[in-house]
Image (cartoon, rainbow, N blue to C red; front, side, top):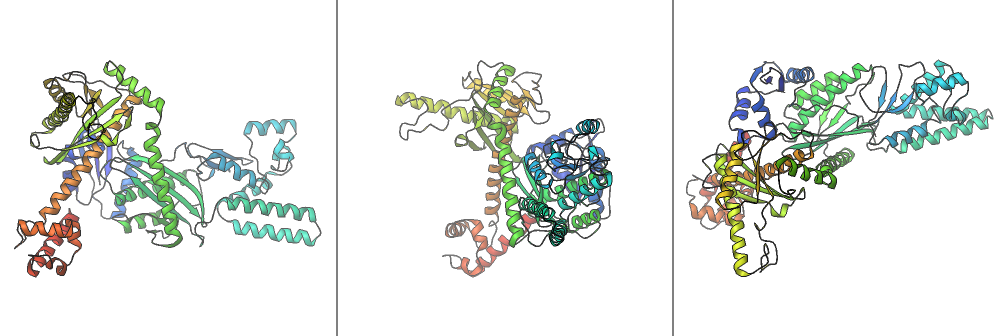
Length: 630
């Protein structure tokens, strides 16, 4: 276990690792190749502390305790916020009340949900009040009707037992509320059988009005249960978890299934602190979410465990056994952690996955699709940067590499605050690849705007419409200059880009650098940055442009590095020269398909014998094993 502290000794990140040396090397080997949030965390950290534990379960528990104690800014907390409505039952009051609630949990109050919409709670509550006529009014309304000695409308239509005027005693009203809680907790069969028995007895005793009332109550309960469709026919208690993510963010969705029915749903969108795959996301989520839920249950004196008997995930975490053991300790009985493979559970997991992807897509488009917010962002950029007009076209350059190898760059384009992906460009850097990010930025800017000037000259010679290719009628690749050029970096990067533009004689393009550490905006040759408000739409737009450029650069870098590693796997194979290697690639189409081929298939390629084929298979298997270990 390790903690990063900043210069003020505040804990900013908590993590766990089997090899602390390897983990720290991954953080500090090359800052330029790190995930943006990781880079910000590493550059903010001033010291590191560590604690050795003996088991993975102890590590999980200590990690959760540290996150709860220190609340590190770079660790994700899956807290419930006010966006999710729940049905609250105030068991701590003399006459418990049922109501829709958003906010922090309170001791002595039972909560059911969360629900996707408040109207879903009110609709269910309206159906159940005829069966469980508990009070739903506020304390002020309750006191007023107690004083005037007359019930409210719900009391007159039998949707409230009217404890305010003494129609029922405190014990009778509490019994009604407890039956209501039992029904929502999933003990529906017992309630239905009891009402059916009472209805039969009333009918035998010729109490037809009471029997009719009980019949209507049964119908109301059945309609309420229909709204919570059965998704797992065996009455399983389970949580189903799914993720959707990219290089920078992740969305998680959870369906809470109790008694085979979906009783609640919730989700979050988080910033990824490190390069995390689904296994890592599952590990992080399970530890933090269930630890938080158990703590809330203890604070509110809730008797039911928030940890279900079964947790269904898209992929098992690396230390799955330790996580399952830790969850079992929280629940007090065995918890299964598994990936559903077939049947209803698999179908439900796919539904949750679609929900996660939809939530992630909506998150990405919410502010980007807001025309008012985009207009405000562009106007604010014009004001803060002192531009002559709003930057309707913004281009951003980002560099990606690992310790100076496979250096690539991306150029993304935003018009009117919206990405224009058809005009994205990527560059494999050659001249400045070994000279650092500043030289790389200069090379990309020089190549991009040299093409712009060249295309304009060609258009003038051909007397063609500016920016349009006369042969295809489509816009040229680099035909239009941006109003604002954003480079990933601080003052030196911005100055280098501006110097290139001045060298090329381009004076109508504004240049800024956006530094990741403190999200500062740097103007060329300016000793002090421009600080935009953290909540401003302008800063959000610049971050989105920069993050999109980073994502696009990382993807290109990984493609290029993967191709290089795949081809290099064939280097040094005895008897395999350049000609035979080219023949193999041409025959199978790619190294990936070559890996799937057997010795006999490879030996059938003209010029490749069986001995060479065996050597090729051995080399590819060794390279694949090395990639897995790394």
